[in-house]
Image 1: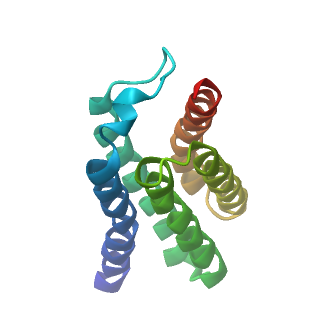
Image 2: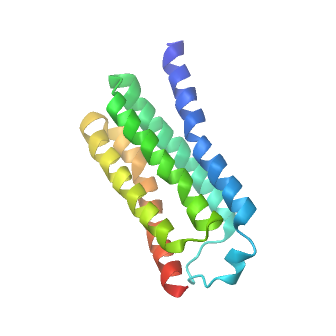
Length: 153
């Protein structure tokens, strides 16, 4: 029983590396650049991102953990961690390098991985699939937002 929950803690810790990297890039390189670009009218206020992403990282961690503890499927776990790599690099590309177009490509890759994971989850564990729906929705919104910023600038 302990090992089962230890694997959840490990997955959570590894997953939380992504926002640590992203937050560092954002905090270090966001301003003054971000204040000077044109943003769409539907750009959310900054305070929204922390609670949304915290919730999403928790949900995606639980989703992959449920798959892992039931099947020990290393292929899906590898896909998940590759997906996290792209998730963490988006902030570096967007806020760090100010490459809006490349960040858009990165986001498309993230969405492909989310859909691939959800397809696998649907077969193996419906709860894991449902836990990923908010992440897919938020990332789709981010795609629209990133696309709009790209077109406006």
